[in-house]
Amino acid sequence: MLRELNHNSEDHRKQKKIENRNIDRLQKALHVKFKNKSLLQRAVTHRSFVNESGRTVKDNERLEYLGDSVLGLVVNEYLFKVFEEYREGKLAKIKSAVVSEATLAKIAQLVSLGDYILMGRGEEHSGGRERPSILANTLEAIIGALYLDSGLKVSRKFVLSLLREEIDSVNNLTYLRDPKTALQEYVQKKYKERPVYQVIEERGPDHMKEFTVRLIINGREIVTGEGPSKRKAEMNAARASLKKIEDGDIDI
Image 1 (cartoon, rainbow, N blue to C red):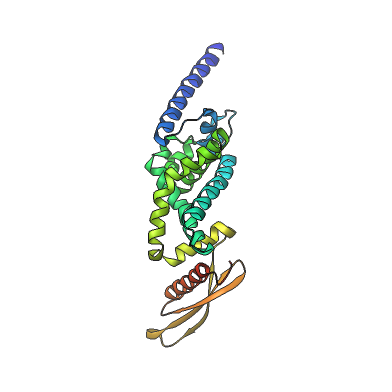
Image 2: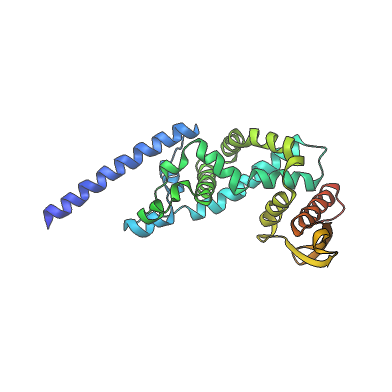
């Protein structure tokens, strides 16, 4: 019994050494230095690891919650100061794209963040290390941990080092973006729900159909759109609503 306890204790010490080495490597990859490394350790701890490990550790979900707010503040502040001529709608559109799951996951992949996440075997075997939602959430958790560790000034510098190029890129390409995708990201971030498209009219023969759809956001009808297919009508409705938001004609 004593030999088994000693063996388990030795395994635990080896595991901690590996985890500490990984934390040091992650700090180098991210170009940050934590005063309290346990905060970074928690930031990369997925709930599946807590469930399977049997160890008394905390997952990263509360840090993710905090990091999401810090991220939003830093990006909004940057956009407000840099793009002084933009209306609220256009700022919101850029911010929505920059802090989207897809963007954060792409940045996380650039630093191989998935390699450093502590997760359960089941989650890992199902592709968890490459899953965009896990990568994006972990990056937000790291931002939250850095805020607690070093404050807003250091957090701002870190966030902008990751996102400044992405902000400029999105700003230059917003007019090329799929309007349905852009609108959906904006609405999901603001209301935690998707825009709703409803076909209200279908006319013409089969080979020359014309569709009219209404676009509903947060329970309100915003615009209608027309097109030779449901998809085209939805795209036109989304494009029209984005234009109204950018011009300040509607407050969604």
